[in-house]
Length: 226
Length: 226
DNA sequence: TACAGTCGAACGAACGTTCGAACGAACCTC
DNA sequence: GAGGTTCGTTCGAACGTTCGTTCGACTGTA
Image 1 (cartoon, each protein chain N blue to C red):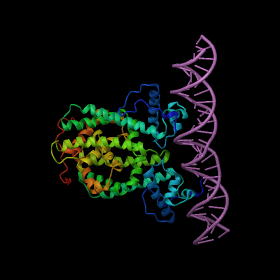
Image 2: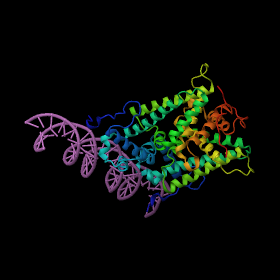
Image 3: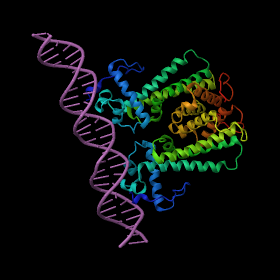
């Protein structure tokens, strides 16, 4: 049916990869500007003509690289999600202390969030606009990320090997509250007031871990107190 | 310029009022259905034809009661904000304990949020779509609500009369984290899993106050532990 | 007679998407 | 090396649809 645009980018596999071919680099260029525009105007509020103007690629040219506006959003969201999850895996490796692992999770999320705030707003804010196959894929990745976090929090609340694990309602609420405080950042963050990712992560980690455990378990945290 | 729709609804004053006149009741009917549609499809994704279909009022009829799509959103957001703030004022009256006052704030916010989740999603999610005069009014109300919360949190962290008050960066982060965890709820809340507003408020209040103070100051909290 | 309420029909503009033609580099055949 | 063919790339122009909004006419009640 759609003969010309049937071409598949070389990073179609699950792992995010470097843009290597000319085609990939050009698509990447379009995705970066699309992220800007979606960030500023929202997905529904942004038109393909806006994306064309921002990227310098003609309207028809956009469709040579991506078959629909929906798919542009999908590619942006999937790339952000897969990247943040891969970094998390790398950082968790070799750390066994449950509290330290939660600290790593929050630090990783916030660092990536602030360094890629536009993409992360698009990921957070346009959470439920994709329907059909694209939407299901994104939801599946999100669920995996959520479950990973619940696992970390459970390990803190009652160590592995204990029988009564598997995501209590308290863990659920705590994890979703944590995601809320982190993903809401795009609505208020000001680098001149709020410091860098490390400072924000330190404050939020302290808030969350004390909230989870009382004062237990936060002994290695430096909570800055002006 | 716009002769017919220049009519002003009787609750144009700052206080939200009961719909009394026929005109007000009809406008209220439209606003309720508009809230539903904005909740489901987002502001930009919803068309005036969607609102017409949902409310049973013809396309032209909508413009007899409200002069633009923007103003519909503005009225929905303003009403939600003013109502939640008025209830907060009523509930705070006569309570002097700083911790108790924070507890009241969270309980009030969550109770209204869950009871009016559609309107509150529209308020949270379409936070920055209104430009010009409407946008400024909403931002002004939001700022007032935020400042009220910072005041309550400051009272907990260092009692009134002490010199070093006035919104430290720690207070700012804590309050914005609190808003994050509360306003994110619309993305995940399931009444069959997460219980009612009182249970959720109890959990989140515990999380927040312990996070803010360590285990100090939470002695009157019943934290349900299944 | 007057006027608030209501709506079908239409306005011009903007939407996502498609079409067909052009370009240039790479490849084949002689 | 010249001439012809392919193919990835690019874009102006248009497709049909839907958008927010307006107009003019018609109702029913006072």
